[in-house]
Image 1: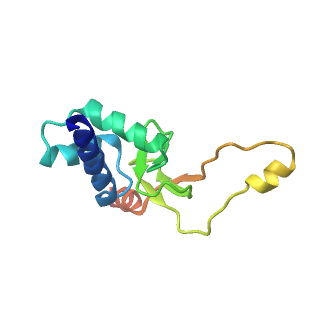
Image 2: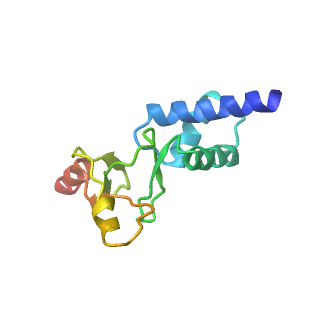
Length: 131
């Protein structure tokens, strides 16, 4: 079926872009895919990103600073550092943390959580020093 093959190709292009870029925003993914496949639409890329996230194939980092959400090649939950200046997301190099067992012991049923540390990345610190 032609439609299935096209969808598979589109998904693969999007996954390849996420693997090549580091925590890219949807705009960056679209620009990356468009370089080799200029006919792909922004709507198609955004729709597939949301589907891949809902299917737990990729992760999403909600930056919350008005900057675009970032997508992650790793769907497994892990902590991130988010730069409040440039909006970039980075993996936090720290042991995995899942406080849900302790919280659930208090009778609260935790269904989802995200660990994000907000601050300023080294590049932005250097730029501020250079001003």
